[in-house]
Image 1 (cartoon, helix red, strand yellow):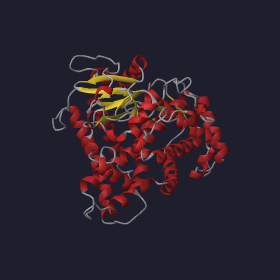
Image 2 (tube, rainbow, N blue to C red; image 1 turned 45 degrees about the vertical axis):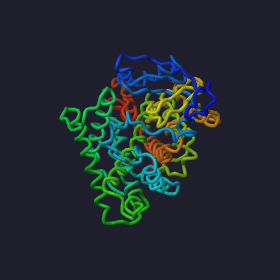
Image 3 (cartoon, rainbow, N blue to C red; image 1 turned 120 degrees about the vertical axis):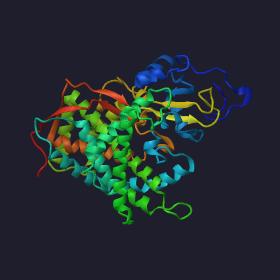
Length: 464
């Protein structure tokens, strides 16, 4: 091991000359075909075969995969200033997120983070709880016992409407079908783009590009309507859009139309996608494990006694919150995190050249037997006691970590738990085994083909 502090530039002969082990890949393309064909399997196999630091190439780009919590902490926290969001990934989504909070860097990112932070502060988040439950109950009024539906699409539509209302005080119900279809088109095409060794400009009229641009137009139309409805009412309604409309730059000017658009679309997508996927995977796993589903239903009935849940109930929904934690372990929406080295530096005694892409995979970390017994098993009870405190800091990281940890992590956890409890009072979701579910990695980890369930009414539900 080198004596150079991790993440610091090398000093002459103090440097280890060898590279980490890893797959050789193909001439010219390196490991890009393997990554594009099965990114989850590729990362998992790399960790098993080569250990905690793995080197490989993605065409002309050098890359590393880190599989130990201490190494992850060095990159995301201790030496985060030496790493930025990696261009190999984000070049695929520039048209969607622009320079919003998710993609910006440096001074711009700090300004955006400070601007968005009040909308996710504890006092404001707590006020969102009633909206989350009310919108869920509105969805349930359209559900009928015996009905078979794709609960993934239901979750996407529900959380999109909740995000629009809580963050922007806007109703999205009239747009939800078109926008959900647009999001699906965009996400599908991003997954396709990840498998390409080269970039094809959006303007070339290939069928995939046309679907991508059509989906993007649907998103832009919704965002434009949300902003236009509030543009002439620059008052603080206690939401994120108020912060954006009232904000000024260093010259005292309102933020630009483009920045406004980038921030709204970033928060709208990020503000609903994580929760929707958490719920989709939760209902899939509860369908596979009916005994766990019964425990959730029993707890919800005991705590709520037939009434609607509130944020005050969350501390008493012990098992339900553990189910959400376990789902995020097995199916983290952010299945991979990428950074790019800004300077020559060191990780684990190895030289890392500027421009190297650094990957961290919560999918891999969360399924490592060093940190989790029976890591492939769905066992919510593992979170009883002090497991969360006993784990190394970055062995469990469903929302990332460091300065760029997901700003909406508390929002997502509260929303997922309240929605799960509200639905569990009225329905058991019986997974339809003839419709297989496969993880589909895009920007996030989506269930390919949806999660199809049959609605089975519980014996009791909330009072009307």
